[in-house]
Length: 218
Image (cartoon, rainbow, N blue to C red; front, side):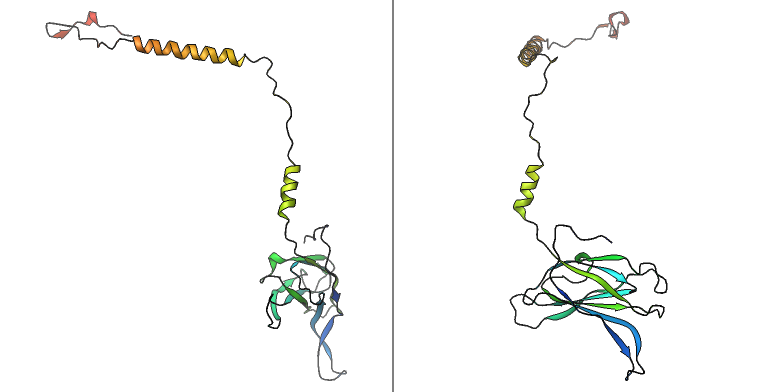
């Protein structure tokens, strides 16, 4: 999957150690459930509009992304929302395809708006017992950056190339001469249309019938 833009700096966040869910009441009976939770704490008091989440996989078959969002200007507690559910990271949980690849989750892939986020929870699943541990490495959160309209206009103007030379007119007739000739032709046309006869040509008949010798084909 595609990586993030080079000119955007990731958010300074804290990646907590993975917590594996256990099955069983006592330590002697515990077994891996195939589920792991990784919490990402964002800067306190500074909600983030998330653009992208990148990471390197380590034998995780599926990942679910949950966002803790707080509505701006409201005193209501933040609420958890599922932004993406069970995104496959491996071709097959029992084989190594995709087990150590780099991945990127963009905000356009999420089912909710990734705005005003105060915390992120990554729920990892690995149903195969072939792997002893699984997790995500090098997790990074990139903020959403609104484009600067003034900068876009400046960049667009800088791409324009001004042409500061006159076109080559060598070999072409003088524009004044061409204009004078066109005016003369127009005046001549007007004179010919004025002098054109409007009399209609009568019929040539002899004793009530047409004389073939008087007809001419043009």
